[in-house]
Length: 235
Image 1 (spheres, rainbow, N blue to C red):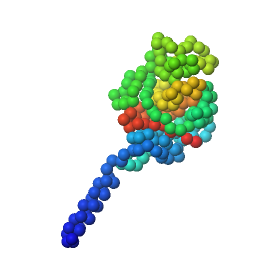
Image 2: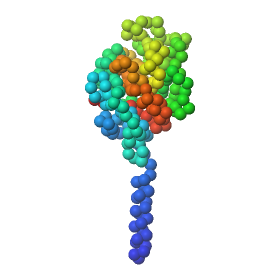
Image 3: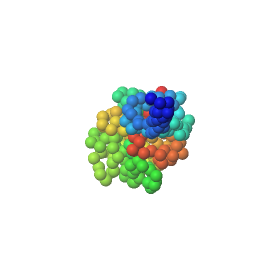
């Protein structure tokens, strides 16, 4: 082989290698540690919200995206919140305990008090009078969005009842922007319903994760179901 041919072959191999490195990475299922939190990735997950418990009911929350094979944190906040009961393993959690489930869950849809924004890609529902999140353990619609007119749950039960449901308009601050997680989508009774990522209230949550309003407004514009977004909660 001549030196010219050998050199040409070497350059071709080097160029092919460079192109392979620079090309887009394919996200695969598995685990990664981001912001101190272990994240269970679904196949093709390219967006992650991490919730790193710091003290009491406070948490450090970050938003990460996968770019060119590397996870990058786009923004984060220190004033995140978790439940007043602390953290609990999902399979040991009980409804009404005020605990936030540990682990990774999908971010599947959203709801709030405003008309849908033009750049919001997650499925979205604007809250109306008579809208509830069902927490009635005797209902087939447990852990589902449901209206009073549709029925199928005991909407009239007082808040003190273990089977009372959340009337969404009763939380105008927290549910101005709210993202629904996939926690307990299988509707295991008494394990808990209505675990969201929503706007901060005055203190701890009842089991959800919350963040400052500005974080939620930016997140609503960025989350894309095609990128299989997830939220991971850790200690």
